[in-house]
Length: 154
Image (cartoon, rainbow, N blue to C red):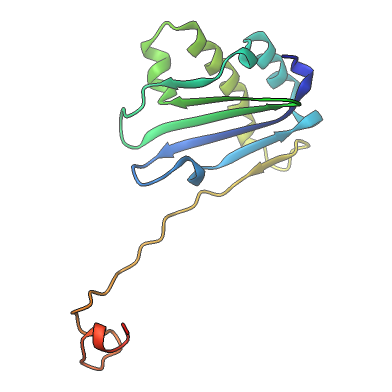
């Protein structure tokens, strides 16, 4: 795979609660020629395009640290998911983990840039809606005195 063929990088990151999915987390998107040179160099130096898969220790801690790195090339996509990178990095000697860590650190540096020349979009974190459900046999909330199922619950 050729490093020049990188069209887009998507980096999803954050802490996942048990009720959340990865789609609830923010995403940084770096497009085409606007991908910083130091990130391209880190990808090349660490042979990240030859990797892919799931790394880390899933299920350790609540909330759980989650990161997803997707590198889109002209003809294919390299996808790396990482669970609890901080814990894994300090508890293993695995060189692959260290290579991925170095690239993610370069991308992490981009998160703090505001109004940069880079084509960077960050999606806001969604918060799940909480609803107070009225039971069918409870008094109706409209104040009629009837059961909900016989009033507004029809």
